Image 1 (cartoon, helix red, strand yellow):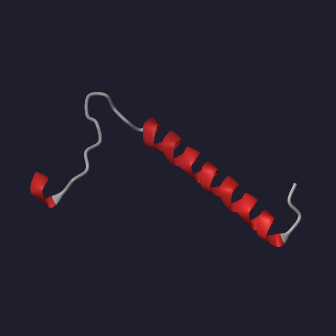
Image 2 (image 1 turned 30 degrees about the horizontal axis):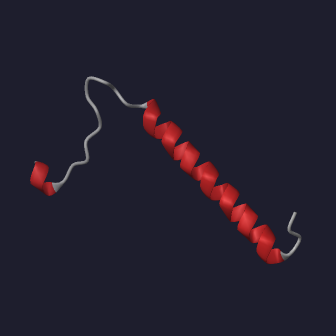
Length: 46
């Protein structure tokens, strides 16, 4: 294991990014309804 400050920050940031990405994926798929999929609303689509 890396004991230098740079190594610790690198490992911490990597873990934080992976955790945030997995939480975004989980919460993004929780609320989806098959009958009404989420759409990105752009001004052209209105």
